[in-house]
Image 1 (tube, rainbow, N blue to C red):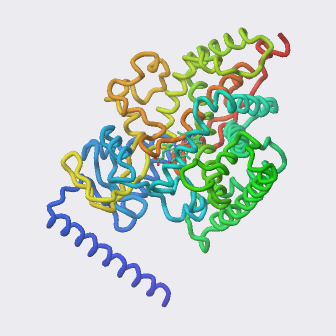
Image 2 (image 1 turned 90 degrees about the horizontal axis):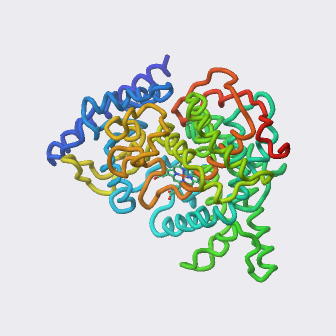
Image 3 (image 1 turned 60 degrees about the vertical axis):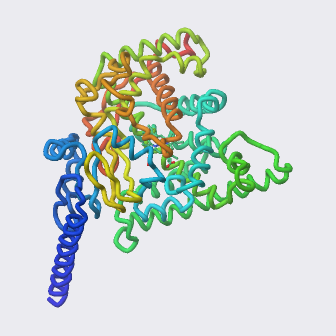
Length: 487
Ligand code: HEM
């Protein structure tokens, strides 16, 4: 009984404090004549978080944003995940937010993320160190590296994975194996083996930690994630130390052409490269950033194509033509990658409709005046790419998967700011080209080797991440017509 009274009193006091603070804040903004973007803050503490989560757990989350745009316009205030947040669904404002990273806005992730990613992760870095690390990452995933090194690895790892498929396959799982193995290869030149498999298992526990309550006392998933993070960091740390020793034994010579080597060398700006701890955090973050996103886009492309048979048959034609030209040579070359115009349309359209990253959170570093409103210093803003990508004003029949739209006038009706699946500004995704190549190579080998049907109905959901609820199980059948070994 005492406990109930105690809980009741604590709740009442918190509620009253909250309401008083909210009223004081409103009065403060009125006094300063601040015109906040219109909207509602919803219930005390939770704001509109439950409405957002329940919308994003369905196949059609759009009403959450659509309803607010209809009421308040395309910049509105809400209250989600514990604080007031201004949502922008306006391409120009989104661009302004992205371009002013580090000046007027800074990236904002929950502090719990640092426990899982490590403080030297690129996602959490700021200022000049972020700039250095970002351009170093870019230099390891740009076109010439892709052309000269990575394409061959991507091609080999995709084929290796597809070779093992029979009967029923969970597409999302297989895509994850491909992207994980590829990132490990790109980072430290290791091919799939028992060690990488063990690392992947631990790493998946870390990922689960991102989507749970970040309190070790309440959540065993979070506890396990923290433990797994330690194990992953130890395993990566061992590789880093061994490689450093090997390198020193060779008088500092470049031994391999991978990201680890580039991190040892540094960027020539400050000192001699990065510390072991910095390198481990960096590698862990890259695994996180590239793995879930690219494997999801692979799965969604297959789902959308399966549901759009005409697009699938055109895509097949394009790849069968490439295969016929190549005869017995299985691996794809750069010129093959460059001769897939319709596939590129499919990639764009999957990115546009799939919206794996529906937008990015930032925090204002000062009061921001925009479109007649003021966003106070310290507030969160969410640049919502999803709402722009699915806006009929920018894309005709915006909510339909239509790869053909990209064959003419770049797919959209207006400015280039409307298509931003990889973000923009100083934090623009450094893996944007890598992800495209991975997806094209995957589609090539998939459609020329297999036909498939969905094994059972599955659902696309958007919370806590965009994914297929049942990991998209399909039944595959090997195609013999274009099996190069039989030609
Ligand atoms: C379809 C796949 C992908 C999508 C849709 C995607 C999307 C994004 C977006 C929207 C951002 C911007 C985040 C922000 O502004 O706060 C981002 C950042 C990032 N992405 Fe990707 N990404 C993908 C694949 C990859 C891959 C393959 C890599 C591996 C190199 C990668 C590495 C990163 C990193 C390291 C960042 C952080 C950049 C920074 O904060 O400076 N991403 N990604």
